[in-house]
Image (cartoon, rainbow, N blue to C red):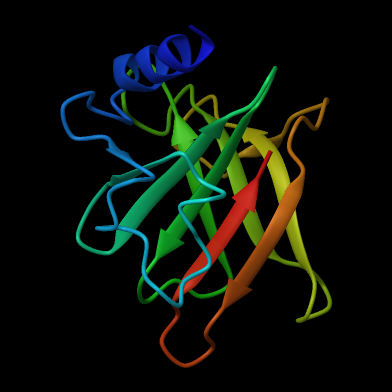
Length: 143
């Protein structure tokens, strides 16, 4: 039941289309040598040619991952908004920290088309992040 509610919410927000959501049994967006493996991620959703969203419903949370196959250097974000744009969106921003080897996940929001502001209550925890410094290929997971 919970999995269906989470999928319905993501679908309503335009993140996931129920007809095109791929389950962990479909190998299409689970590369053999990638950061995302079917035994850890229940679903994946290609967003564009170079972006794939991964998610797994947990008891009270959703584990979310993003893979960008190229040209993402330093930071990436996933935003959810009722209007489909940045204005009024809640965002998960994953970026390199002050130390180049450190990664940070932040819970952010935007009132307008401006730089996002950190949420007072940080409700996101970084599970992993990696980046190829030559191609810009980036992958991260949060809960």
